[in-house]
Length: 290
Ligand code: C2E
Ligand code: MG
Ligand code: MG
Ligand code: MG
View 1 (spheres, protein in one colour):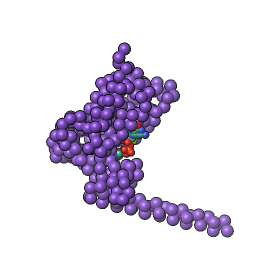
View 2 (tube, protein in one colour):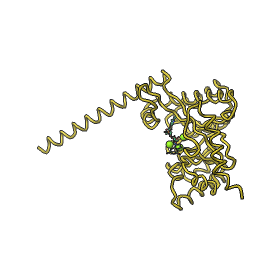
View 3 (cartoon, protein in one colour):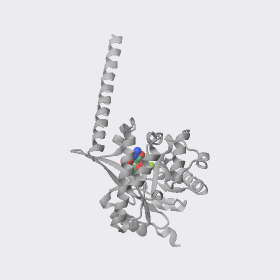
View 4 (cartoon, helix red, strand yellow):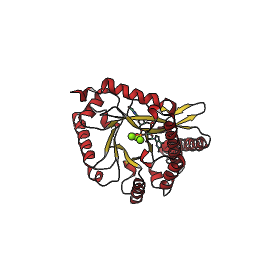
């Protein structure tokens, strides 16, 4: 009897697994179609300079406008895309789309023009020999200067892959910036910071929303280390004025988060940029006043 119960459980598990795999396959099919049928869209989130209140760059964040289901967040489909080369197709699409959009923002003039854009690149794409060509052709097709593009890489995918680092060096040599995303959640040590070919450090949200004094001290150390290695720092997930003030106090360069602006569609970006300036002027300027 015990044996039967055990076997029954295995069958239930098999069923669950089968269902999960089927759901994943369906999502992957849907996503493949979404790329072809233009159901993906990029939203943009401004990054605000904590000294001047200016916005000089935005991060491009993909959303899926699934017919009949509204906007699907990347947390749902990026992991599925990352299981296959589909993530490289998505990366190519994001590079091309964001850089084309940048040219359109420029042409429109106003607060959306002259920005830099940061695009998230998955580990699999980074490990693919096509990455450099993909970046180059997106730059050429849009006529954008390489200096206006940053690639965001999560540190977890980077460790111990010399070919990937060489690819990043090649891209840096043409002027593309490299950012380490979600810093503090992966494996990059202070020691590695001195050696890795990066320009920007994005401090993970989990450090920003902690009011534990030791975490604040940690952020101060990271900002200091970044500065001495010549890296710029972006604090992610800033939601409150008090966090902005704390970041200003430790010398953090820039901040990104709902406090200044949520990620917005392209047509709403100019207004969002202006909004960041206004919020900064109203609530974040007094640090400098005295
Ligand atoms: P990420 O690159 O670390 O992006 C930041 C995420 O934090 C975004 O979530 C953004 O909407 C969210 N965020 C920004 N400010 C705040 C805040 O103040 N509070 C909170 N709670 N969250 C905030 P999103 O857009 O859902 O993207 C999630 C992740 O999906 C991204 O994390 C990135 O790893 C991945 N992703 C997004 N777009 C792409 C893409 O085009 N390609 C790849 N490979 N990955 C992408
Ligand atoms: Mg990112
Ligand atoms: Mg991040
Ligand atoms: Mg993230």
